[in-house]
Length: 162
Image (cartoon, rainbow, N blue to C red; front, side, top):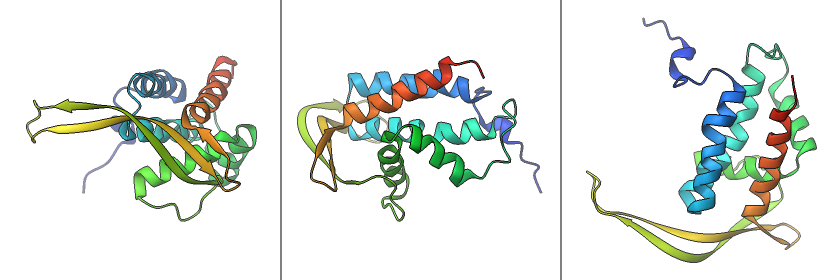
């Protein structure tokens, strides 16, 4: 039996602040430059997953907090994270069995295409788009706006000494 050390799986990212710097901010830049389904899912996953990094960061001493309550507190402070959760969950699992936000569908207006012919697996294409989230009320919100709210929240969070 192999002894697994989770610290060896972090690619040198030591804590939640490093995750903000090394993962979330680059995903934000990539999404801003190339808004594709891939970059949207990657940004959503990182914006939500940082909650686990914060909770499990041993320097913060809060690992004992109940995960669901911890997540709910962040969602209370930043309602956009509820929609981000659902996008993240859908991106990982294809479905959202316990939605937290009131998003019902994403819409997209295609703005371009990217083709790559140099992969070892054959040609790859992506479509860039302007994405909207349609809420249960029928209101349409630009995905850029939802991501911006979450980014502003985490920027403020990580800018405060802890």
